[in-house]
Length: 265
Image 1 (tube, rainbow, N blue to C red):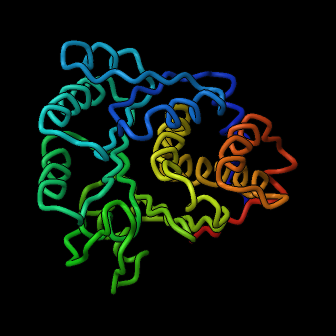
Image 2: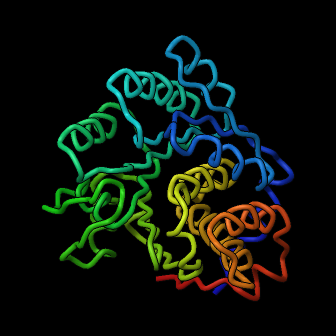
Image 3: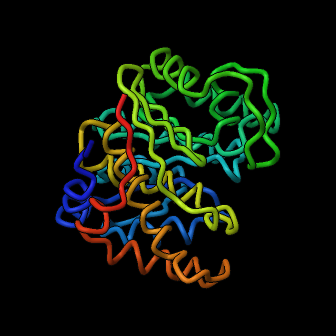
């Protein structure tokens, strides 16, 4: 079943939404680049003196706690409050949740104090936010004993948001319907930053489509189809990363419609 992934991509290219980030310093350059090659406009503004103003002119806000500090989280709250007032989607990548008590606490602080529209993470990160007793290995996912679709749907209903669990099979749900995205390539796990880039892609697609679950699934599908194309010919990690940006930039309807692997439940 198609969800119109290419049509949403075309909206991104036509509207060129501004996507405001308070994000991971390790991957900030890659996050900016992936937004740009998809056709949108990235801005990386972290200073508390300007984040509210920047969110006020943006079409989406992406928060990523990968390199968090208490001060950065304070800026995130200011930006998210501004985004909430404007009514634009706020994406929170709970990067590393389940690794330390500090990350768990700050993730929940954000979720409790501002409106988060999309929670994104790997299986153990999201499960930890959902209250499961799991551990994350740094920012690499750990084992989760429960059915991940159930975990995601319960969290989505509890928080009244969309939840995206990324992995070999992506799970995207708003608590009512669920998309399973089975695109992608193993080479994505060989470079740093694909998870953070995925959050930026979700923010980019949610900036132009009010159905956030559909938009998130479409964004992940397009990103991962580009990864499949970039992996053709068996490049190493460095060449793959360069090709990934090229393949995102060149994505067309025939590639997406021939390759998309999305199950709608």
